[in-house]
Amino acid sequence: MITILVLGGSNADPAPATAIATDDPSVEILSAGSAEEALERLARNRRIDAVLLLPGSPARELAETLAEEDPAAPPLFAPKSMGEIAGARRLEAESSDALVRLIVQALEPP
Image 1 (cartoon, rainbow, N blue to C red):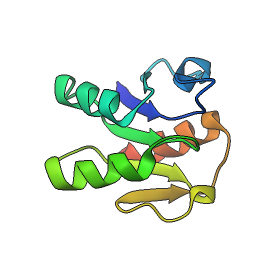
Image 2 (cartoon, one colour):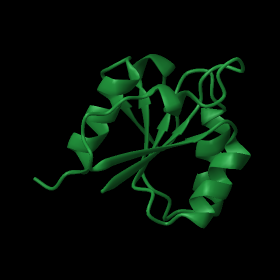
Image 3 (spheres, rainbow, N blue to C red):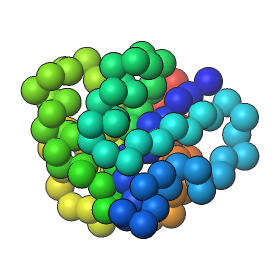
Image 4 (cartoon, rainbow, N blue to C red):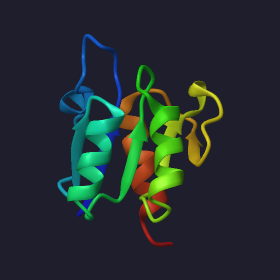
């Protein structure tokens, strides 16, 4: 099971992860509407394998906080269109579904 925490979306849609459909039963999607909520989820759930930062999220705030407070945090991923975010791997996709597929590929053993 791969667990991905999704942070972001717009203020109108604070939990976009609920809209992310995956046809892979071995992928679990969790959501966080704020950096604080994401930090809480990461602290409580050590099974989180990756964090996906979406446009409209406090991505830079979360990345900076994780770098300072939790160097063992799971890897961060973001669409390339968000620009450079310290510590985040940039992905060549825009749709949430495509981003999730790329993260799963990146986390699977070779």
